Every structure is written in C-alpha cells, then in structure tokens.
Length: 408
Image (cartoon, rainbow, N blue to C red; front, side):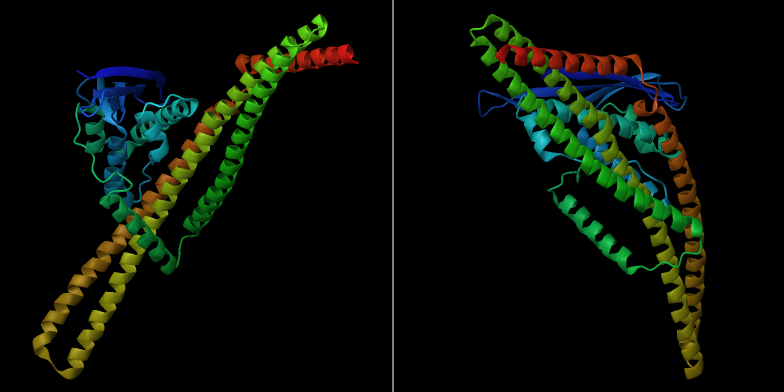
C-alpha cells in the first residue's frame, strides 16, 4: 500500500449551507522502479462531507479527488449549464511550476504556500457549487461528492490536444464577439454588463497593486532578517558590555519585526490577493453568461435572416412559375419559422436566467463582503497584534536611542 501523508488538515462550515467540509492534502509516494528514490505522484484531496439533505444516500461520506477531477467537473457543468445562462463558478487555475515543486518534493516556503492556496481555492469553489440551487441538483455534482472513484478526467492538461482545442475555441469566440453587434433592447442588461466590465478592470488593477505590496513586504522581511543578523554579529564582537547588550536587544527586536512582516505578507496574500484573484475569475463567469445570451440572440437573428432568404426564394419560384419546387420551398419556410420561434423562446429563457443569476450574484457578493473578516469589527487577535507591533516599535526606538547614547 502506498504511504499516505496527510497535510494541512482543515475544517470549516459553509454559511447557510447544508454541507460541512473537511479538507486535507494527501500525497502518495510510489516507489520508482528506475531509481532508488521515491516518485511523488499528483496529490489527492481527501475531504469528508456531512450533509442534512435527503437527496444523498448517507449523511456522512468521504471521497478522494485529484485536482483534474475538479477541472473535469467544471468542464461538465460549463457544457451543460453555461449555454442556458447560468453562472458556473470557476475552479482555480493550474500552476505547472507550483505543482512541479510539490511533485519533486522540494521543501520550501513557496511549496507550502502553493498547497495552502490551492486548498483554500478548491474549498471556495466547492462552496459556490453546492450553494447554487441548480448546480446542486446536477447528477455530475452528486457523483463528484458521493462516488468513491471517478474515471480519470481527460482533456484537462493545458498542453494536451484537448487543451489546445479549447484555446482555439476561446480565440474563435473572442473574434466572433468582436464581430457581433447586438441591438440591445433592454437597458438593464447593458448597464449590468458595463458594471461587470468596469469592476473587472478595477479588480485587476487592485490585484496588481496588492501583489506588488506582498512582494515588497516579503523583501522588507528578508532585509529585516539580514539586518537582524548583522546587528547580532556586531553585538557579539563588541567589547563594550553595555553596547553589546543594546545591540543584542536590537537584534532580537528586529527578528520579531521580521516575523511580523512575514506574517503580514502571508495574511495579505491569502486573505486579500487570493480572494481578489478568485473574484476576478468569478467576474469572468458572469461575463460569460452575458456572452451566451448574445450567442442566443445571434442564433435567433441568423434564423430570421435565413427565413427571409427562404421567403425570397419562394417569391422567385412563384415569379418563375416553377410549381415542382414550390412545395419544398414552403416546407423550408415552415421549418425555419419553427426555428425562429424556438430560438426566440431560447433567447427569452436565457435572458430571464441571466437576470436571475446576476441578481443572485450581487446578493451573494454583498453577503460575503458583509461576512468578510476585514468588514467585521476589530477583534482581540487583531488588537493584540497591533499592540504587539506598537510595543516592538517603541522598544526598538528605546534601544536605538540607548545605543546612540552609548556610541556618542
């Protein structure tokens, strides 16, 4: 049996949900027949689930899923529900570099951060899926949550043939969107689309600034650590006892400051930058629902154009007095009239779904922002950290002043 190592156990209840998730990262080490070392295969995510819904067979069950299984679930849900106007929550993006570090067993801070980011992102993805009333009823979602073993998801690799085909389809859709000029009859959709596009641009700018802030905080942490070591070495080589003691105290304070800077950088990355990136991906899904509505409208317009051509062909046949082809022309007209009626109904249905989904998205976003830790009153932990920072800074000032007094 492969040796299993559980990492980063995590448990969190979903607000207003009938599910309770417990995530842990599990890595299987399989002996490699070509060398003496062990080969780390792609990690699995183990998560027990507890639910109160009667639609499931049991109240508690545990499944093991690969990251590709999450991507496969998203592909299935997108294929079935996105054309109907539903907002399908997006999974986290693949990171070839981060996954390679984990596979080769490189133990550093970046590998741990990558695993934690992926775990948190997958947790948020599952929360959004099971909290969606329509997606929860999907058989693929129930199978993903209940079935012990799933068939290996194919076409999720970025460098595979299916991945290249997806990139080609996305490029084709982008070009077709540029060529389609929709005559919007409902001002509500136009205003909401402008709001989504403006929010997407602003969040992308904010994400870039936060990422830059995190990088600068990490650089500050490294520089503070170097300064702390230099001061400690200087204090150990100082002959004056009082000055040596002051330098040692200053080195201790700088070391604590380095830890605080590192914690602040990690906090900004996990609780701010990652959430912004996740929200940007979600805004992309919202824009996708508007794109599918535009496609439904274009399909309806193309059917109307074809119907007009069929009627013109019938008029030409009547003018040319060709009764042998007239019946076929009438049948074609009846067929395209039915298609026009069908596509018009599809467009109305997709428009209604998009309207409901956007309203639901706005309500859920407002609730999430209200429950965000940054929107809550300052708790004792935050106050304790702030007071600790103020104490360390004041202590640093006192030691520095004493140090200047000694050397002057």
